[in-house]
Length: 161
Length: 161
Image (cartoon, rainbow over all chains, first blue to last red; front, side, top):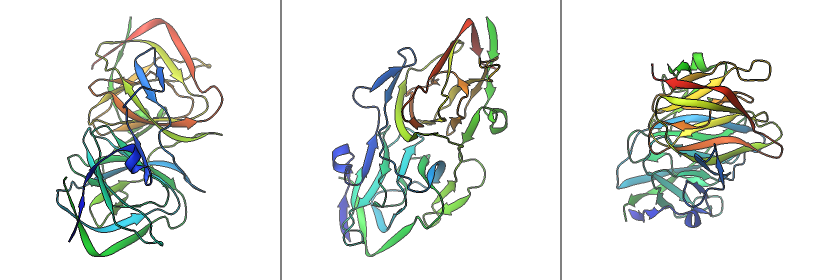
């Protein structure tokens, strides 16, 4: 199987696929009488003709190496994943190549990072690496078919660096 | 000082102020080939003439008893707090009584719970009880003054049950 080597998450490397948000660097604003830093408006969300909702996802943790057979995309809106535990998780994405996913890339977040897939971005299903696999998901609520799945003929294997 | 005794968080008790979301009970949908439960669309969000944004808040942890002097409200939109660590946090709210906050109530969440203040709800500032005090906040991005603060003449003291 073709190996995909996991890269450390970085805003720059992830930019073609979505946003990474965390509390690194200087806050945009200090609020609450000096007791809280606000890192303002860090995700490029798009809900089309729908609206934003918060759902909770409770996913099974995965182990490495991880066999990747399925990616999906949401043609009607963006989708943000906010880990509700202070642990890293695995994020798999793929460029679109002629309306099909190209060669996937895999990233591992740092604890305290959330990510937002831009509308239409091919991505793997939620793959926590640590218990609890609990995430708040901000995505589009609305009518229409917002899920497209793609199964690879040959699975990839995602491995640690 | 008047004491406010902390209550355990419950969806029912919190309903006049906002929503509680977590992965308790049966998921609304099983996704990702059986590996993930989706608890669907659990927050009543309202961004008025603005739009939804995700910001990261990094707040100092607090200890009990906690002296409460300030509450605030956001007249133009709802505000959701998603803890990025698997720990409880303190949530203070107050009913509106003639355009001023009435007697506050305090709740402590369970690990894995997030909350959403409905538009215009009086609430205390973000009060984590455990490190890291890291939250993703989904609130209104837009123009206009969306912050109203109220300082109590006599502070309250928030104490454990």
